[in-house]
Length: 200
Image (cartoon, rainbow, N blue to C red; front, side, top):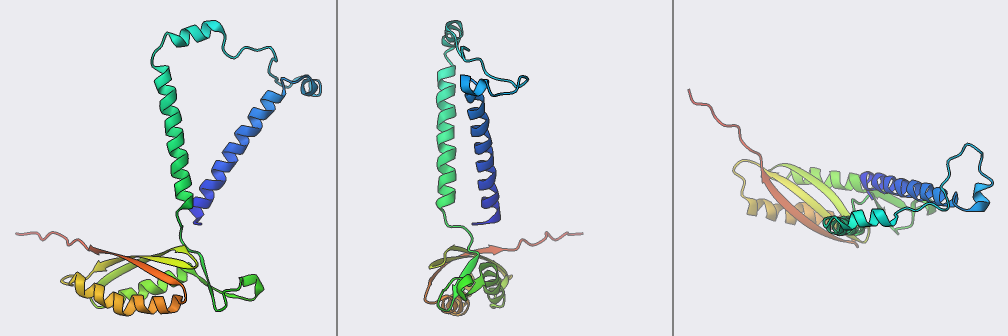
């Protein structure tokens, strides 16, 4: 899990927990057992309080827009929750890769940093003829890796020839290093824009 996802998860959990604690504490003040133990100056809710009386309901019924607004807000909430769940389920950037017998590091196993493996793969791709630059992100899970490779073509380079060289050399070496795990590669080509020439 990346640092951004971890920070977002913690922020959401913190806000949700704080709202739950504040709401529960406010509702608890309506109970006589809790109200008697609270200090004199503390705020508390009236147990006989009406949150929405008949007159307020009549005023809300006079406006035809609020049911649609409530339904739209609930729908947006469901969509946001579904998007967050899908984002969490989606495999993130791989941080560590066990080597050798794949024992955990605390049990004497050896691990390779996913960032280091991606950097080595990017450096190998940059040494390929016809490649002007390369960026690699290592995604997926320890047993099923996925390399997202973005290659900047050199001026005049043929994409088909560069793709063949990458598959024959760079990706073959990466798959051999990651064995017995499977390594799927997704390669995107881009061309560095040239500055416009000025005519005098």
